[in-house]
Length: 112
Image (cartoon, rainbow, N blue to C red; front, side, top):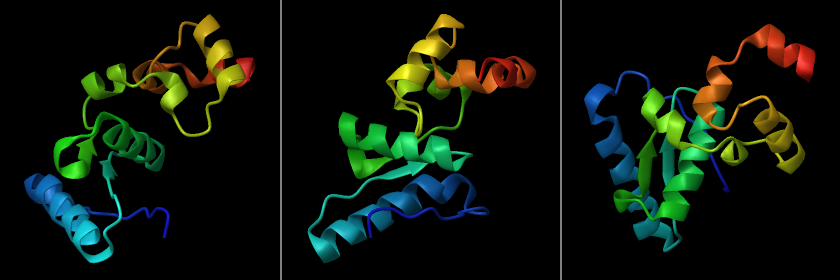
């Protein structure tokens, strides 16, 4: 399995620890590297997972829960945003995931 999207609604404050235990179990059972990304949307969860891998996050779990996290995430790290779209978004001043989530939908629809 390459990746999986799961709903962990209801875990509350223990979600990060639960995901760290899950990552550790996968590593122990398979000897394969494993990371987890936690976020309110699948797209942001995929980006969080990518960042957990590339940044070598302790415990292998990265959670994107605030605008601060989205401000740190370059738009080109978002699933489905390639170089051409990154350039077009950049020309509009959309540089981060936070910029994209706060952009006006009618403006984006008109531009794309």
